[in-house]
Length: 89
Image (cartoon, rainbow, N blue to C red; front, side):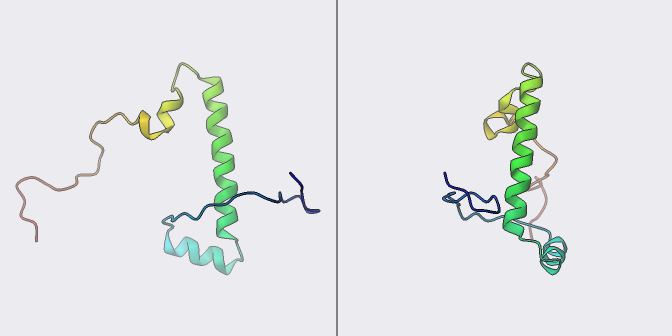
């Protein structure tokens, strides 16, 4: 893979995704000139590296499935959802 002079890789495939970001955080970031797409990509790279390092150190403790949809325990979370017995308006 070729690289440009400033180090950015050429030929990287990108996908379009939708994320929900706090409005105030987004507006402040844009005001400061932050490239939100690149910031999200960079953060996810760091997060992925941290998760992989944690998994390598603690193979028996959490396991890879703990960070994935398949690792979801299936128990009820703190989101109450629709309350039984209450009238919905």
